[in-house]
Image (cartoon, rainbow, N blue to C red; front, side, top):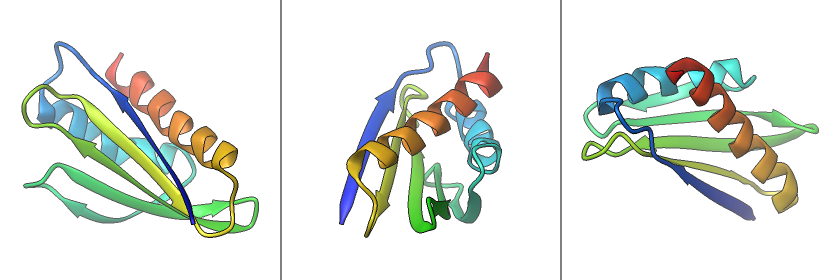
Length: 97
């Protein structure tokens, strides 16, 4: 199983603003939100990339509004997972611009 993690800070944005954007970023990236944990500022998603299941999550820091985006899959190369995680960050950037 391969997995990747990307981190990014959103200065000037509250953790609540970033969490609300994360709820929208996953569907905007073509995936589905399947679970959310508001108190933990965690959004879990799932979907398909090249016919393979991908699981992703966005964790928002309550301290500084930064995010950690993770993507994992059983049968996809790291390159595809990195593209998926980057796509999630692009969607977050659009929503938080």
